[in-house]
Image 1 (cartoon, helix red, strand yellow):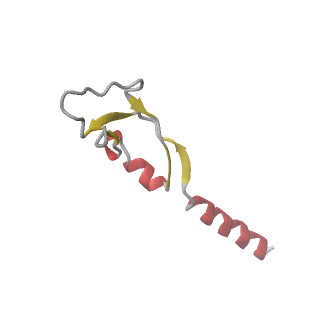
Image 2 (spheres, rainbow, N blue to C red):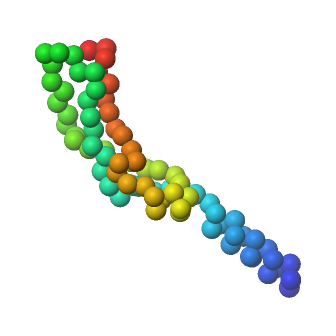
Amino acid sequence: MFCLLAAILLWVYVAAGQSAVGKFPGNIEIRAINVPSGLVAIFDNQSVEIKIMADSATWRKLSADSFTAYVDLTSY
């Protein structure tokens, strides 16, 4: 009986420390960088949704400002 209780408690401890995977609740604005002079970047989408994996303490600290989405147009 003791071993069963110890195993359950250990499983709960390990499961609570695992990282959660989910879709971030906010949208991240897309920026264009290195746009050649004389050209304008036009997007079909103005923002992106992301899926992240993090522990629960990190999830609470995240905001839309924690991420950056950009299109690098250096080669155009």
